[in-house]
Length: 269
Length: 267
Image 1 (cartoon, rainbow over the protein chains, first blue to last red):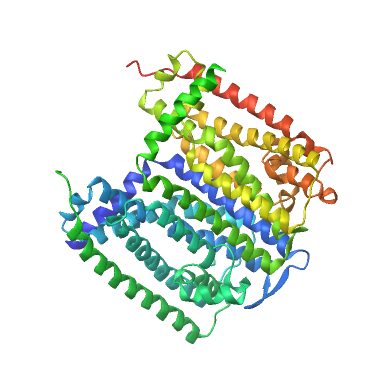
Image 2 (tube, rainbow over the protein chains, first blue to last red):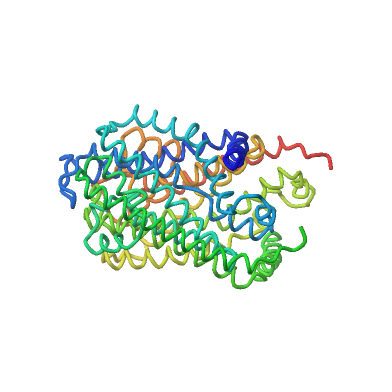
C-alpha cells in the first residue's frame, strides 16, 4: 500500500520529464563539453610524462581521465534541484498540498527526485557512458571495487539528497535561497573532489575537506573505483563516515522540520 | 541621441522596481560574487599544485578566466535578461508590444531592461585584473592599455553576439533557453582556460567557427607578451575588433530574420 504510493509519486516525476527530451539532449551536450575541457586540462597538466606523483601514489593520465568521467557520471545524479523545489513549494504555498498527502514531505521530495534520477539514468547516463567509452579510455574496475563503488555511490547520493533537502528547509526562514545554493555548490565544487581529486590538494586543503561531508559523495567512491583504496578496513571507515553523516543530517532535518512547520502560514488555498 | 534620452528614462524606472525588494537586491550581488570566489579558489588549488599549464602561470590563467567573465558581464548587462524577456514574450504572445512602438525593436529590447546582476561581476573582474597585473609586475604603456581596451570592446561584441544569436532561437524553437544555456554556460566554458591546451581541431573551431578564443585568449596574448605561444598567425589578436563587429552584425541579421518569422498570437 505504502509502496504503491511511493511508486506512483516516482513515476509521476518520470512522466513529467518525458515532455522535455530536447532539453535533456542539450544538457548531455553541456555535460560532454565539461568532460572535454577537463580532459584537456589534465592532459596539459600531466604533460609528456603521463604520470604524476600525488598523495595517493603515482597517478597516470588514464586514471585521471577515468576519474573525470566517473565524476561527471556521479554529478548526473548528484545535481538535483531539491533546494529550489523545497523553497518554491514554501514560497508558493504549494507545500500545503504536500502536507495533506499521506506521506511525509521528505518522502514526497525524495520520490520526485528518485523519479528524476530514473529518467536521467535512461536519457543522460546511458548516452554519456557510451560516448565516454568511445572517446576516452575509461578504465574498468575489478569486480570487488566495482561493487564497493556502487555501495559508496548509493550512500553518497542519499547523503547528497539529505544535505540539499536540509538546506532547502532554510527556505522557511529565508526565502532567497539561491545564494545559499551558490555557496553549497561552491563548497561541493572545491571540496568534494568533483573537479580536482583530493590527492592533488595541498595539506591544508586536505584537512578542511576531511571536516566536510562532500568528499564522501565524489572523491571517496571514485578512489575505490580506481583501486586506490583496497583494504576493507579503509573501506569500512568510509562507509561508517557516510552512515554517520547520513544519521546526523536525518536528525538535523527532523529538528528543522519540527521548527519549520510551526512557522508555516499558507494564505488561503 | 533620442535613444540615449529614452534610456535615461527607462533605467531609473527599472532600478526603482528592483530596489523595492531591498535586502534581496543587494544579496544578489553577494551571491554572484561568491560563485566567482569559488572559481578563483579552484584555479588557485589547481595551479598551486602544478605551477603552470602549457606555459601559463596562475595569474595568467586567472587573467584568462577574468577576461571571459568581464567581457561576458558587460555584454550581459545589455543583453542577457533582455533576450530572456524576449523568449518569455514570444511564449506568452506579448511580443507584439515591442513591434508596435515607434522605436527599432532591437534598441527597445536593449533599453527596456538592465542587467544589474552583472555589475558585481564587472567590479570583481576589474579588481582581479588589477591584482593579477600587479602580481605579474605588468606595466603596459598607455598606448598598450588603449589597444587592450579596444580589443576587449571587440570581445564584448563577440559575447553579445552569442547571447543575441542563441536568444533569437526562440523565434524558431520553443525551448531556446536550453540552446542558450549550452552555448553560454557550456561552450563558453572552453575559454575559461587558455585555448592552446586543446587539440588542433578544437583550436580551429574556437578561433574560426565559434570564435570564443577572441574573447580572452588572443587579447591576453598581446598584453601578456606571449608571442612565443601564438596560434596560427601572430597578428590574430589584432583581428579581435573585426571579428566582434562581423559577429555582431551576423547576430543582428539573425535577430531580424527572427522578427520576420514572428507571427503573434492574434490577441
